[in-house]
Length: 306
Length: 306
Image (cartoon, rainbow over the protein chains, first blue to last red):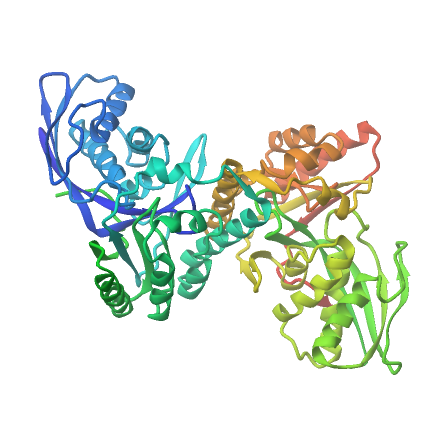
């Protein structure tokens, strides 16, 4: 195979109580990427559509991730990468992760799949490192694997796939203001109270249980975050109102997607999700802030060949 | 019914990554308690066998817990409580929790079961409050409910029961040195690094997943605690050696039971657990420290009528 085109999905990381360890994969939002082998022994970004992103191969997350893979594989194969960038950078729904994950997935296919999809995670994390200064896996893992991913451990890296309740839907609002992940991370305190941490791990344990038992209400109750949300939500216009509005319309729970400014509402079933989406749309339209709004199933497949 | 005798089991709380939110119930270790109605409108401790514990009804955890139940039930029923105390106080395997849980379970039975077993947890927590200065639920919940209990939230109280992998065994070593829960709590730092907290909730999420999937190896890997264990283990003679010894003998994982000094090794199957138990016995006998040593299944029933 000389050329491949893939869909690289957006992802929602953290999910309130799972800061830095939990993420899930979206179905209806993502980039399209084309990788083509070249004979130049060089990884090049040969086209970016839709967004203004670096084309230098040591600054673009896609090429950085592919180069990490090639280094490990001890290959000097060259690739031309074209990105149809539909996920806006700085949106908080895993824009850099989609590019990193899509690129390593595609390169691996073109190389004859020397790696399992799970094994591609560390290479994609190298893309995250240059995007945010931090090698987090909670976007790239669900982008590659689909569904819900839990990072048990970063050192050594161990990522688990968790079951997906079939009626789960997610509404994602992206207020069109940009927050860089780097900036959004810098406002987080590096020490937390033990009491808050205990609440957080109690909720994360409950969330994992809720995924196994398909207990939607428990899933909603476990979407609490008293560590990061109180700080980051300040940067998101009308966060509190959106939270109350969504829950009043029947959402299971509401929180910040990744480092924001996108926010998400988890819902049970299409009808409920449509109601929540509509209410958020009407509210935000009145506020005069530009926004994107998505309703998605949980994508159980991750990156896929188109 | 005028009189009832119950078995009140010992419990292992925290289980490394689940500080203050997780506990499991033991099968082979516990107290026996007899409750008898009296006509004195008074809750009395009429006998304690085996240990030197307060008999004043506002200082004994069993009577305190029963009085909390009676207050909520708006009843002035009197009870005589006799305790055959086989769990040593200060052992770290839920001695006060067993008495509290056993007492409210028995009183509820004698009152015609106005409360569900789940609803008894807050009353039993009142016993924990006077025992340790802290209303924790991670011993009383598994003592009452059996199996693994996860405290999602303390306010409002929400406790989940998690599944029990059938081959799970637990070896508990109690070095006969006493550590008061109060003292053991006082050495814990009230602030923790966000990095450690993230590791902790990643592990707790994985542990919950492992219980659902019966993934024994994952269960073992998730038994990490970089928050409390590094501090509390200092109080436990040869903690590090016991940990290494148990894992070398095939234990899934090793940690501190509750606030210590008891330690536990989780094992898969009877044969493995026997090997680990034997190795711990031989090691500790050489060290000349008095100890108790138990091997137990996970008790799925909790407090039961004898």
